[in-house]
Image 1 (cartoon, helix red, strand yellow):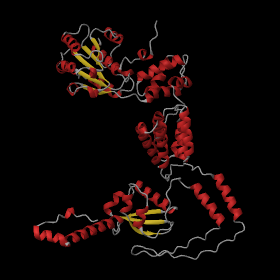
Image 2 (cartoon, one colour):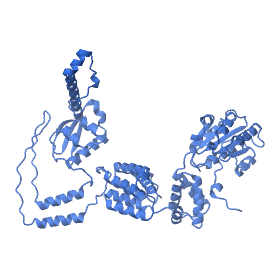
Image 3 (cartoon, rainbow, N blue to C red):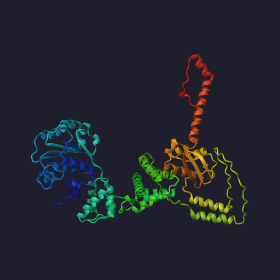
Image 4 (cartoon, one colour):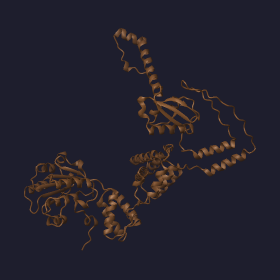
Length: 573
């Protein structure tokens, strides 16, 4: 007996054994059980997701000798003949090779005759979008009002090319791509029943290569069995698929998190030597970032048998969600624009350098990225500084300085006594330590370490995103060296979201180089930067309108020609 490929041997023969299309199975099962049968069905979806298989199961349900049922017996003459593809009242047509109107007319001429052996005459037209416009027109009338004994089941991978006049006459079902877990589970079941040993990692690779197509997955499994000598192992599957060890992706991400530009370029050169496609590498890098995001947000969803599980969970702890989303977006844009680059190498490296350049300051508590500080070099410099300064005397302490506060009404001046400056050697050591502990190589120069009460000026200098709206609608109530109290008007209390508060606090802490606690309340006088800016704009507008009205030339135009001033057209310079 000749060998039968897995895709044919394990093709589902009932709704219960169909994998991954529960939403379609449920609708068809209910329709069959309630005898609410439509005369035309349209199954859409990518290759290998079960369109033709579902059509044949539906044909068996309609013609099973036990009656119209959602659970055909599978043993009667109609069921067995349909499974073998030779049931006389099941007419399967490949529209890709029968596109012309004459073929469609011949097909429909036979539709008027009663079925020979079954209850219904079922027409399965695959890739229906390939029919010509004339062929579609020829079938419209029959499709709209077919004989009671005729059922049409159309299938297509491109429903956009099917005329709306046809779509409106069909009950349409969209078959989804198979989930990776569904494909892996189905392959495990098949290989176990076939008594073929396998490694879970190999099935993950096959599932990934199948890209949602169960037929492709089964074909690749057949190929892997032959390639691996009746076994499906990771090494053989990688070699068969041409899948390159993707550890370079993790090295690239490690270099990015470490801010190590030289390692990024070195890794890119190694990839070039190995002739790795940089466009595919950006795609794989985006997939890796997506997996890290899933591991970060829903760690329990990462499969226990996933080969990269431990690495993904580790990366999820080391990178903030903000940085992760930034890298993902740059990877997508880099892949889109790589064809515009001078060459793929330039496009790939520029994408990575863009990630490096725009990496935000890591202030999230979930990001535990370790800065690649040259600790050994810092220690050497500190030791040298101590030796050089060993003969110098300590400088005299500076006098106390009083900071005259530009406080709002009701605030008192704060007297700040700066700490005694350490010796030069200690200062250099502190500078080295500060460099080691700096949160990012790309943090802008920080502002003053002391707050003078000028809240609006501080808001203008802070690097804020969406949290700027909260800052602009805050009024300074009180402050000291370690805390700032703010009030928000009742009308803007919706801005007090935890996310905005956290971002504003992080920006202020970064600006002053020390932890500043923010306290918020609702109310106050409403003297916020936003109100001040609004008042200034209104005053500037009033001044501009007054200047125009009092202008001699404008007055002459009004008096001599009856001109009128359009207020909305006046804009202050």
